[in-house]
Image (cartoon, rainbow, N blue to C red; front, side, top):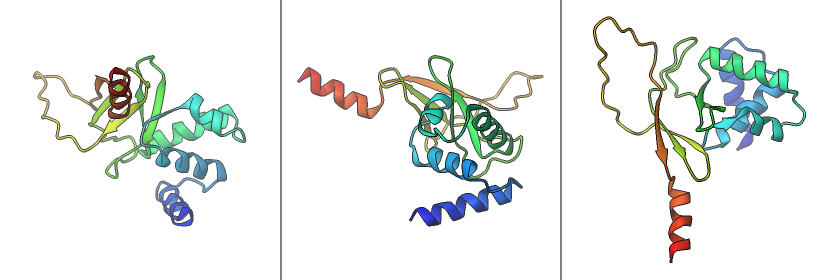
Length: 149
């Protein structure tokens, strides 16, 4: 199973004209395995073989190419998540809701919600939208409900 993943990550790097390096493949593998956006410090803590500067460069390159997108959590920390398939270089289409859980502090990308079209006043030319919601995620909601019982 992991082998198929590696192959698709290699194809993704090839498509974006990026060298297929071990660290790049490892970052892709880590980000795609999570159902929440992941902060750079969290990535650093599990990738002890990749130094901070290399990781920063990888994340920047991936963001520029439209492979990942950056979203900020409640503390203003940058978190990263895989982009939807229709993102391209310098043209992100991540107009989905980012849900910040106030209990576990995770940031979820809610891609499946139908969002209303946003019409801006004349003269405003948007380059993208970032939509946030805060509250309690299902996992924390269950935990809180158990404590009440």
